[in-house]
Image 1 (cartoon, rainbow, N blue to C red):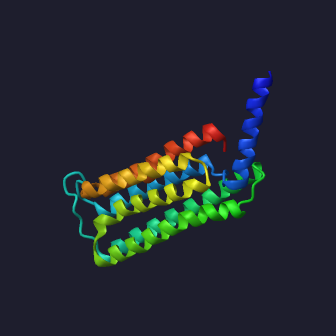
Image 2: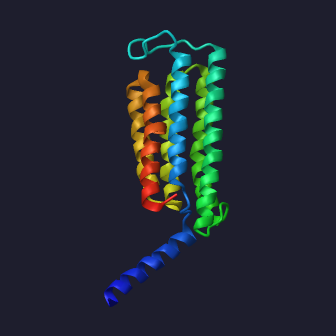
Image 3: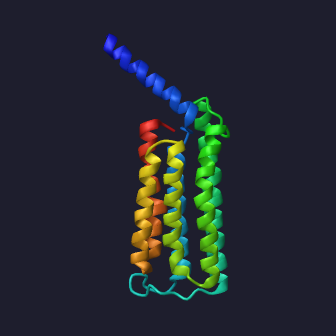
Length: 205
C-alpha cells in the first residue's frame, strides 16, 4: 500500500510539473479533423492539377496562374479551418485541464511552432513564384515536422514522434519528387488521423 501510494504521489507531482511547464491541452479530435480536411484538400487539388491525366503515369503538370491561385486558395481555407477547429477543441480541453489557452506555457509552444512554420511558408511562397512547384509539398512536410519537433519541448512528447515522421516523409517526397500529393496525403492526412486517434484514446478529448 505504501509503495503504491508513493508511486501515485510521484505521478501527481509529475502531472503538476507538466502543467506548470508544458502546454498539455492539445486535442486528439482536432488532429483527426485536420487529417480529414487535408485529405479532402488533396483530393480537390488532384482533380484540379491532374484533370484528364493519370497521376501515376503523367506526373508532370503545367499549372496556369489561375490554377496556382485556386490551389493557394484551397490551401489557405484548409489551414485556416484546421486552425480554427483546432483552437475550438483545444480551448475545450484546456478548460477541462484548468489550463488557459493563452498562458505562458501556451505562448512558448505556439512561438516554437511559429518560427519554423513561418520560415517554411515564406520559402514555399518564394519557390512558387519562381516556378519550383514540385518542391513545395516536400518542404511543407519538412518544415512542419521541424516545427513539431521544436514545439515538442513545450508540450506532450508524442508530438516529437509525429514531427520526425513528417520530416522523413518530406525527405522521401524530395527523392520521389513526382509523388508530392501522395506524400502530402500521407503526412498531413493519414498521420494526423492516426496521431489524433492515438491521443484521443490516451489522453481523452
